[in-house]
Length: 260
Image (tube, rainbow, N blue to C red; front, top):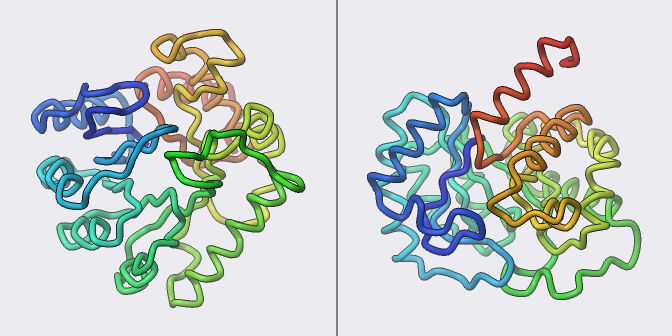
C-alpha cells in the first residue's frame, strides 16, 4: 500500500504531494514501483496535528482521488470523517482506512450502507493532537489492541458488513511508546486470531528513529526491515512511503522461499 499524503504538514514528506499534479505523478510512480494499493490522505495524522476542516480536506482529496481512480488499481482513502468517506465511496473509492475505527458519529452508517467497500480498522489511543503525550496502558498493550480491534469488528459485522471486507491495523505510533510499538511487532502473531488480514504501518515511524538514531529522512533501511519483519510475522499489507525499495525486498524474501 503506497502512501500518498495530499497535505502540507505530513511528518515525513510535508508538501511533496500538495499539488494535485504532483500527487497524481506520485501515484503513477508508486504503481510503476510495485504498489498494489494507493492510500490517499488529505489530513495529517502525525503526532501533534490538528483537525482539518471538512471543506479543506475534500478540496485537497477529491481531485487526486478522481485521477487515481483512472489508474486501474484499488484506491483507499485515509480519513476519519464520515462525510469524506461518503464522498470518496460515491466517486468509486474501494477502501475506507480509518485511524478512528469508525467511531465518529455516522461513520458506521457510511460503511454499512455501502455494498462492498473494504475497511481498515485501526487502534489508536487518544487523538493525533495528544496521543503521544506519555501514552500509558493499564494492562498488556497487545491484549488491549487485540480486544479493541475484535470489538470494533464485531460492531461492524453486527451492521451487516461481512468479515471478508475487514482489515485490522494495530496502529503503530498512534498513542504508543517505543516499547509498546516493539511489543506489537514482536508479538504480532497474537493478533492473527482475528482471522483477518493485518496491515502494518511502520514506514519512517519515530520508533525506528529511536532505534537507529536516524532522522525521518534517513529511515529507509529501518522501514524496509520493519516491513519485512511484519510480513514474516503475518502481516498481509504493508503501508509504505518507499514502494520500490520495499517491493524489491519482498521479491527477494519470496525468492528465498520465505513466503507462505
